[in-house]
Image (tube, rainbow, N blue to C red):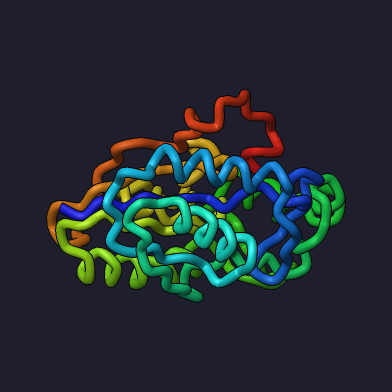
Length: 218
């Protein structure tokens, strides 16, 4: 049985400002995010992690490094480009309110109708593109770590799509479990070398000891 701990990166300035970051955009982590990463690491400190796999985008890479420093097992960190966030094309760096005005259909479908989201107008990746990119990486991680605990540090939209896909959720329903908060933990298990997955915990932030607001979930 392989247990996968999916971690969303710490909160950034653009998260706080309700801006799309995507694979091409990036902004600094908030100062309080470093404290929250330490809280997450303390919560998982005694879990014997075999490895950490992370998106190479700075906000995710730093999150992985900070957490890894605090874990007892001091796992090796590998950066995988397949774990990057959605390429959001023209939307990257734009505030949500601005995107809603300029690209209302894309805004609505990206948030609420993944099966209808067509990035042709703004450029970038569809939900299927991201799932097809990420799934081979997850499958390989499971096969390379039989009966181990591994951590995967990535991004909110990409993780939401991929985790729900691994659980067998139809494309149209990928958003129905809700968003993943910054510095959250979602745990899946596979007992058959990545052929199927079961959900152990979704979007856990209990260790942060705070009430989430909407900017924590964007």
